[in-house]
Image (cartoon, rainbow, N blue to C red):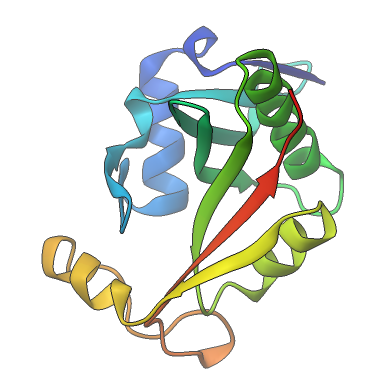
Length: 160
């Protein structure tokens, strides 16, 4: 199993991955509207070059923002390896912090990132309603029956 740049994967495979796991390549969050298939990122692939996980990010000045993270096999460290790859890349590019946004229903992500040193720094109340105005297919109810309303921004300081 290997971590490679997302650019090393055929574009059609990247598009298919996002459509299967997100419904589309488009991510609408309060920091912007992104086509994840066009972002920098890393993929976790097995020996058969099957993509088992993907992370995308953008860099703005000294801040790196994780836009998407997906692991199709839970509990094997794939998400952790991908986040570590982003953290190393951010460090190598003199970033001082890594941020990300998730929704209030995504308790799994909140747990995952906090275990890896990320802190909750902002709650953007009703931000998902604004995203829904652009992308109406965002569901009203999310994980564990929790209404999807708010975005939560997490941050990790990195030393360069």
